[in-house]
Image (cartoon, rainbow, N blue to C red; front, side):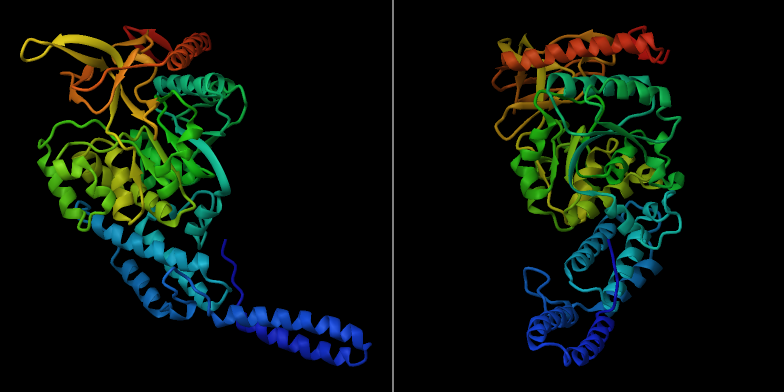
Length: 515
């Protein structure tokens, strides 16, 4: 991506060539001279233009000449000498501030014309800061001696590419749900986006499991990526990190625009529709809300957020979790990111940092549940634009009538999953798999019939218990939505049979286990 030639050298070389060529033209017919000289002077003008640096960089009209390279170099050296060290709990804001500087410097690098020594210094400052702040990019197994690992990472993204990334590993249940998802996307919804399965080494997802997943893709537009070929696992421990692989999968994928899916996600529309949502188009980072639960019950979590987020963005100030003290903001079963946007890319680096072993064990997974809150928090602290779906988590399931506290019948929808809607308030996906209750009976399929949005949640007493939503309109699934789910369940049942036949799973005591 970076290519450096000092424009001063270009100009000297060009002038010398002009002088020599001018002497030769003196002996040529006049019409040849009149034809060639304007071309040569145009080339010289272009070289001078590159050298002058008098080209606007940003919307404020700043120019290359106005960039203080010495100050940037000094800042990078200061960051190197004062690298982020444990304990990490009160370092999130500082990582965000340095990330914002990195975004600014990448903007200069990407927009400044010419390939001068000054630009070389700027690239060096950006690389030094990135590898100091995010050490996991600095020792890629693929390029262990690279001097520009940040550039190497950005260079793998194919311009304009879009695709689905599904991290899979850790056992037969994840393989099974990923196969359900692949069959539903390809054979029911007709999705044609390429799919990339990301895993953490051969013991995380074996070749037999990879071959099985590939066989379920009727389009054969599926590929596999071992994340350990991109990142050194010594500070990550991704096989033991469960959800921690997700941001690294998004970073490592060759797709510039990534639709990151949990293997137990279920779609009622093509995933391509996510790329057409206004929030994604406007911000490049599209997230989904969790349920509104447990108001005022997680004081330490909120105190920590308030301490580390010193200048909340307009996006955060719209959050009911932030303003009304609810517990959880994000359902990270689906995340949509445009890595061509510098601030989103650097925000993703911040998210990945939060999921490194030491940081997640000390802070991220201790104060919050898994990776969920790291997504919006990383984007927020890095200064990236992002936006959530308009509504907090909905419910998809079955209508129940139950007396309320006053003895009156109250309509409610109950199930084990959280559902999400598009810009037109149509269901687009839900979490938790096609199985009715994956924690109780691994093969209990049933087509949902109703859903509710913007009601109040009644959380089940345990993870194995149904939750319900009350206090809003009970909505019926359309015939088409039920058809999609029915066909998806039929496909999932066939997948289960195939996996059992080839020795990749079985049902035992209500649970799906390794054969």
